[in-house]
Image (cartoon, rainbow, N blue to C red; front, side):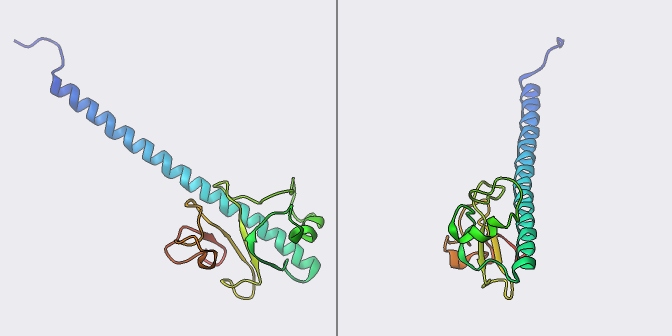
Length: 148
């Protein structure tokens, strides 16, 4: 005769089901967070691209800067900053959704006839090997304006 209680096997099955559901939930949250960071990076890049277009309309060319971080506190960006092309506090680095600086190069070497604008992506390194010359290399997680 059986009493109204759970067997050890039934309890283990329920715990297993809960563990599977928890793993799926955590994985989904992580995926959503990754997509959110990427979307924020693309939005920051789009805002900066609009500012670059305003600058070009006023000056006739994009800011001529060798490949490097976009740091509006740097003298290389003095003219761009003085024109008030971006709103808000523009005294430092322009950062992506991962908290890392965006990078810019004009004239572009990857985006011929225009400028290169990119983020190192979630792994925080250029290309797949960390070399700035390999930025946006195939197979890397870099987010680039020439590969959208």
